[in-house]
Image (tube, rainbow, N blue to C red):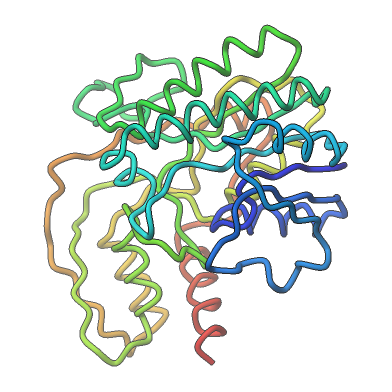
Amino acid sequence: MKLFIIGGEGFIGSHICRRFLGNGHHVTVYGPRFEENLLSDIERAIQKVEGDILDFSSLQKAMEASQADVVIHLAAYGQGKDGVAKSAQRSPQKAIEVNITGFHHVVVAAKTAGIKRMVWSGSTTVFGFDEDYKVPTVPEDVRLNPATFYGLTKVMNEAMTRYYCQDGIEICGLRLPLVYGPGRWYKGAGSTLVDIFERAYSPEVIEISGGDELIDLMYVKDVAKAFYEVAVTKAQISEVYNVKSHTTSMKEIVEIVKEIVPESQLHLKKTESSSLYPLVDCTKIEQEIGFVPDYSIEEACRDYLSEVNKKFN
């Protein structure tokens, strides 16, 4: 199978590239050059095309030349190391250009190239805050009420998905919660998680803010697995799926990390968040695709810390 991965040089994209390469598929990566080269060890195994999704002509030519079977679209507007949600809030016009116009360019280019399937990175921010829902976990088909501009752009992407799925192309958005794991070079909403793992071996005292409030998280290697399984499945795919690895809390993560790294100087400063996202129900993707995450919270912590340890030793 041939893949055209937009944003393949990024945090999530680099793991997706490795997943497909490891299973013998051909990968073309399209997007701007990243300061952090997360593909340096596999550059010879992939085809890289530098470009911008706002340049429709270049995007279309690159997509057609790749002869791809599936497009994976991961690009979103980000400003420096702030993360996509904060960047969209600060520069909504830029977010509209990249997240909405850029998304439309990708869909039309894929259709024109005769590509039959596209999988893209959605977000649980489409739901807004948990106070809007009266159920323990929310399924895919509840009313959406985004509380951020980034979430609003993802709602627009879902609307475009429904529209274009009537037109002969399968499009599927994976609603990702907060994603963590090795290679996350920006902080954004995951800044606390980055500190927990990247500084776990530091001799300095590290104060971590958080508590025992439950949150959904997804380990980046599980994200790669989800994209892979939706891309290659012979089953008919739905327009959107909720996905996650586990439901946990900052308190639990700190406790697990300190069990694995007893010398760690992490100290939890108990705080409560004024706004939490709802927990999601992932039954649909398991029933239709058979996707189940590989990593429990304990396994993800061990794997992430192992990667951090290798980096510094």
